[in-house]
Structure formats: C-alpha cells, structure tokens
Length: 545
Image 1 (cartoon, rainbow, N blue to C red):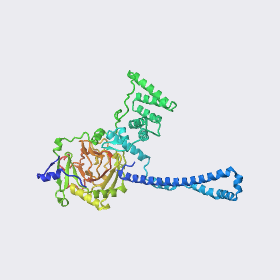
Image 2: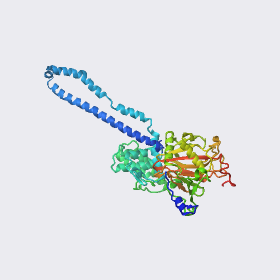
Image 3: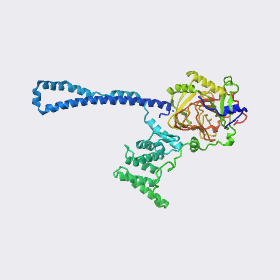
Image 4: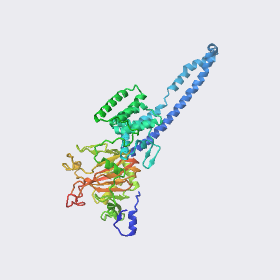
C-alpha cells in the first residue's frame, strides 16, 4: 500500500482505497462493424435459401404433374390424342406452359444475395489482413508462452471459450508461417494440425499435405532425425508423392554425413511430440525481447519493498490551479525513478465514449518515423489503428486538453493533437522512445533525423497517456530498462517526462505497449513539447536533473 503525505486517518482511507469510476484489421473498434456485416449477410443468405426452396418446390410441383400426364400419354399416344381436349392441352403446354417453366428455372434468387455481397465486399479483410491476423496469434503465442493446443482449444489465461481452431485452421496458420519462411511457428501449428487429425477430427486437408509441409519445416529447424521420420510417414501414405522420395534420400545422406563428421552413431528421434520449447525461437531485431515479453506476462518486475516504500498517493491541485481546487486529482506514484504517476478518474465514461465516437471514422493504421528518413510509415512492431483529434472537433477535446494542462502544469499550446489508438487482435507497440534522439547522439549507431524539427516546437518533453478501457488480459505498458509494468484501468492516466530538465533524453523511458491477449484496448495520449515550458519546467543545474 502506498504511503500518504497527509496525517488525518480519514484522508488515509480516502487516498489509499480509490477506485476508478467512470482495436490488416488492427482495431477492435472497426472489427465490430464486420460482426454486424456478417450477421446481415447471414440473414441475406437465409432469404436466398428460402427463395431457392420456394423455386424448387414450384419446379417439383410442375415435374410431378407432367410426370403423371406423360405416363398416361405415352401408354397409348394415338388413343390419348384422339380426344380433342388432350390434343389441345398438349399444344398449349408445349407452346406456353413449358416456356413458363423455363422462365421459372432461369429465375435467379441469388441476385439479391450477390448484390448484398458486392456492396459489403469492399469492407472485407483482404489476404494481407488474414495473414496479419494469423501472425497476431503467433505474436500472442510467443509473448504469453501459449502452446498451439491451448489456442486451438480456446484455453487462454482466465478464459475458456468455444472459439476452437479446426485441423484446417491450424494447417492454414502453419502454412502462413511457412510461406513467410518462419519455420519455427510453422512446425508448432502444423504439428497441432497433425495431432488433431490423428485424433480423428475431420478435415479437408489431407495428412500427406500436412506431413509434406511439416517434415520440410522440421528439416529447416535442423532436426534431421525427426524430418526423416516424418518423411517416411509421408512415403508410407503416398509412395508416389512428387517430393517425398527425393527428400527422404537427401535427408538420410545429409544425416549420415553429419554423423560421420562428428564420429557419432545414429540416435532415433525423440518420441515426445513437438511442442512449445522443443526448438529454440530464432532471435530477431529486438535486443530486449525476452525482458519485454516477460514483463508483459507479469514476470521479472523489479518492484520490491524498498521501492514500494518510496511510492505515495496524494491529492494534486496543480499548484492551486483554480479548476482543481474544489476537485483535486487523485495521484498515485507508479515508479520512483524515473518518476511515473497515475491519475485516477481523469476521463468520465461519457467523455471516453465521445472521444471514441469522434475517432472511429478516422482510425487508420498507426505509423512510426523511419529512423533513416524521418518519414512516417507503418511497421510490424506497431500494430494498432489511430486517429488525431483537434480541440475544434468537440468541446470534450477542448476540455480534455485543458485538464491535461491543469494537471501537469505544462502548456499544451505546442503539444501534438490528441492521438486516439485502438489495439485489436495482438495489437502492440514494441519498445520505443517517445522523444526524438538528437543527430550524432552517442546512444545512436547512426545519425537519426530530428523528427520534430519542422514543427518548431522542440522535442517531446512528456507523455500523458489516458486508458479508455479495461483489458481482460494483456495490454500492459512496460518499461524494460527498469522492469516496470503498468496495467490499463479505464478512466485513469499515466504521466512521465521523456527528457531531463537539460533537454537530454531520458533513455530509461524506453517503453512498449504489450499485445492485447483478450479484449480491446483504447488509449489516447498527448505528447507535450519543449517550447513554452521554459518557465514552467526550467533547466536544472546538471545534464540529468
């Protein structure tokens, strides 16, 4: 429990027992529209089926009536036609009634359904979105150390649903990774596909196809004995397979060569099934990957009793700001150095809904600045959708901007617009700095363009981050450098300085938005710039004050 700077028992209770009142498709906010679109298409499909059934019933009625007539007429054609009424009705049927039947058969009840599909198709996810969704599941799998079976059976931390993955779903996941030369994930998902197929689950994909992709992926992971065993299974199923025989001979020669060179004897492959941890995950571009992901799981936190004893909660009136005197903000320390604070009840439910309403039509894939060119571009390490809101858009935005200024004591006249972001399936922002690193900075391997030079407002001195939703699982803001994790709480906000008083960047503030495991994460943030803060946050005496 945080200590309080006041000494009255009543205030102690009030301070320490506060509760909050009151997102490829990378945004849950936009994906909810797809849910209703699919419902509308299902209704349209039902109407089409009903129309087809009605048409088929009419055709069956015709066929039944004409079948009875032709049985009589063909039993004695001359006798049948001897009756003038029969002769007339035959001429009439062939002249007009069969034409009516032809018209009925040619009617296409699917026109309405096809038209509805055509209208909505422009909003459908494309192949890139589908691939992005598959990679998002793999990202969650890595970050939260979930095996493929847990995903396949809908068993997520604190959640067990009927959202299951079939044999074919798992195969498609594996193939997506395979096509991206990501053999580590390909093996995990193809193995799960094979496991479910061996358990008797029905599938469109054949076992031979799964074994074909799986054996080659295992070979790429450097496990020749298991690759040989899987290829032998493939040959046994399909002796005439295009590649299996050649691959088997190649794998066997390669293994023999390796064993001779190492002076070892053949060891049969492990009978243990391939699972998370069987193979090492390849390293990537992010040096603090393991630390970052551990913090996302709530592991490796550097909070201890000594540090916790230095954290307090207090009422903040913005140095007697008139707008905060009667209702001061509730402020809690989240970390001591660098100092990170959380403010409670910053945004009301109504304000949050208005901000989301304004942002939803404008949501677009979030961008980052290319460190080489300074140009804004999308990146796989930032997966969310964002929108920028101006004070002129609504009185709520004006009010929020003013509130941020009152709380922080910093002017927002030179700040960036309020950015609203929605993180969807696996949405994340990998470790990054909010401030722009200076050209020729000793911490940089290469020169980095001054990203904010054209703005003329200096660097990003501080970040004010509003949490606009609770998140069922995942979605923490983590600081790998000093081992802190801050979890979203609707209506609260966190604040920290990115620069020392000297204007030098505080490299400890490198932070990340963890992937959302379950739920939808809405945030809005205000990046406050240096210009205008000269007398509000004057320089210190040293470089790191």
